[in-house]
Structure formats: structure tokens, C-alpha cells
Length: 226
Figure 1 (cartoon, rainbow, N blue to C red):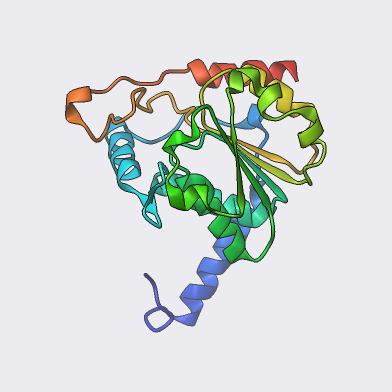
Figure 2: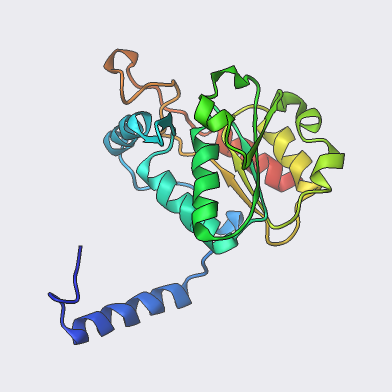
């Protein structure tokens, strides 16, 4: 890590000017239609990233987020300061617990809702977190998991994290009816080189099967119809 003890004032000033120029010339949030729908990550880097994801926990609870997810998500939470966080996909509750702790550390309040079809896998620490509401349900029937009566009571802005890979078009179209300007939707695992099977990148015997463009195409379909 750089230190002001080892860097000259001129060098620091030059860096900060360049950084400011970069942010001023490029919008912080780019519309989906203007984004480059490909990445620069190699397959080897992706598999190594997945290996790290499976090994990462938060307060002892499996997190299922890699280093890129953690940095990007915490920055989004700070920038957006959402009043409501909706997480689709809970697993053992590590992500919801991490989000609750990060929001608290940032000094603002947010209602955090985590939805999954099977909540029996939740770790006790995550289940007992008073800042998270867990809803057990099938997102194939998203209107039952998150009924209109509930959504209309949730304060905006919203931060929605979709990570279930089920009924993607239906979920996005349904939630779009309740979202407002300033809300943010994060859709995970749209990179076509991401492994398909749980554990790939960690367990060599599983090999490697790329995800492909199916989920990304579903997102594009949803945006074309909303």
C-alpha cells in the first residue's frame, strides 16, 4: 500500500487529478444498453476467483462472494444508501448477515429481506440476526414471496440482489412494477465464462462447464419488455 511517507506531494497531486478526471469523464452508472456485455477475465482467473469464493466466510458463515463481489457490493451500498435491500438467494445466510453488518458500519438503516426456497440451511448466527427478515418461498411464484402489499410498504431507494437463476424474466418484470428512479438492481452470474456447477473451481473432479449466455439473454429480454 502506498504511503505519503514514500510519495512526493507532486506525485500525489498528479494522481488525484488523474483520478478526478477519470470519474468526471465517465458516468458512475452506465445504462445496460450502453454496457460492453463481455469481460476481460480469463477462465483461469474466473476459476481461481470461484475457489476463493467458496473459501470465504463472514463471522464464520459461508459468504459465497468473491473478492470482486465484496468490493463492488460494499461500494454500491455506500453510494446508494438503500432503505431496503432485497436479496434473492440466501444459502446459509452469510450474504444477508454481511450486508446487515456493512450497512450498520456505514451508519444508516436499511430493511434487509432475504428470500430462498429452503431456509433450513441457514446458519444459526445468520438466522438470529435481528436486522434480516428471511422469507421462505419459490421465486417461480415471486408474487407470493414478495406480495404487492409488502412491496408497497418498503421504503426507497431499493437495492435488489438477484442470485437465484430461476424465473429471471418473471422476477425482473414483476419487481420492475414497484421500482422507482434511484433503485438499483444487481444481477449476479451473467458472465458467460462463469462455472455452471457449484464447486467448480474448487473441486477438480467436477471439471469446468461455462455458464454461457443464457442468463444474460434473459436479462436482455426482460429489459426489452419493461
